[in-house]
Every structure is written in C-alpha cells, then in structure tokens.
Length: 77
Image (cartoon, rainbow, N blue to C red; front, side, top):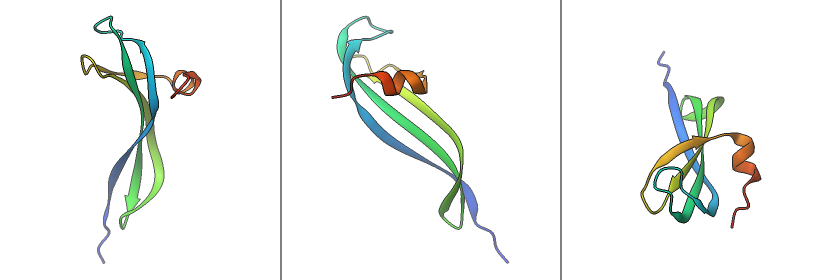
C-alpha cells in the first residue's frame, strides 16, 4: 500500500493598498497576500498547518510579514 502525502501552499491575494513602504519609504501600492500551508493526503489538502500574511511593495519589491488583524483591518481596494 502506498501513501502519497505532502504539503501544499496556496497563495491568495487579499487586495492592494496604497501605503508607505517600511523598506524604501516611498508611497506605493502594497500587495496583501495570504499563504496557507496544508497537509495533503492523496493530493487532497486536509489539515491546515500554517497561515501567514505578507505585504509586498510594488516599488522596491520588499516583502515582509504582517499580522492577521493588520491584514484584515487594511482598507483594500
């Protein structure tokens, strides 16, 4: 009997906000993403392992993590 298992990460774009970047200091569009990693068994995602929220600057391409509450409180457009 073979067991096929692994981890799968799905990236979902929550939106884009116009903010000042922490890295370059420019007022630019910031892309807010949610990255959800799940344990998969026979290619079916079953158990959520980790969920992270990231913010990426479109000017300098710097990417850093943000909290869940901060990601959901931003006015996305």
